[in-house]
Image (cartoon, rainbow, N blue to C red; front, side, top):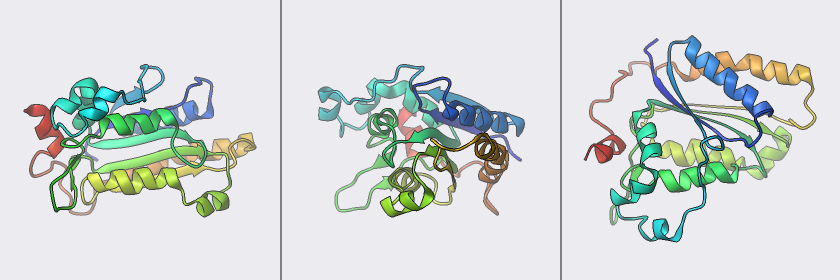
Length: 220
């Protein structure tokens, strides 16, 4: 299997959380298959999720809008795969993670807006997109609510990635009452899930034919 560069975006405020165990299992599985891992711990790095007024006013100024978050954009542009590890709160993404999406996935970088045309994807270099999460609710309750967090990442974000991006979503439900057996079973399933996620599509060459919009933008 070809080596990938993987950006793992991790979001949880407590180092002793079960999410930390999920993060470690994901990273260990990636390292075990020879991939390069860039772990972005949003809380540990002190990411500021709130968008200041001046950023919002310059949101559509393609190129200059990246200045406040350029380091995060460069890390995303270097990746071939993107994996999120976070707890599902109120059926969706934690505010910290949602803020990262709001501030980093910008016009002219993550997507291209043109008059009278559908938005064009900017992250065509992302060929693998994965989610590993914990949910307090049951699967049925999450389904009735429409899986908002899953839709944000595996529908909304996916539309900006490579057209044939491989995706994976793995969740442990009823985490607040899950016993050691259930937690161990979930952690044990992660290496196989990671291996399947990182496989290339049939007939897919690893290197894209041309640089993605995100990489071209940062190179300018």
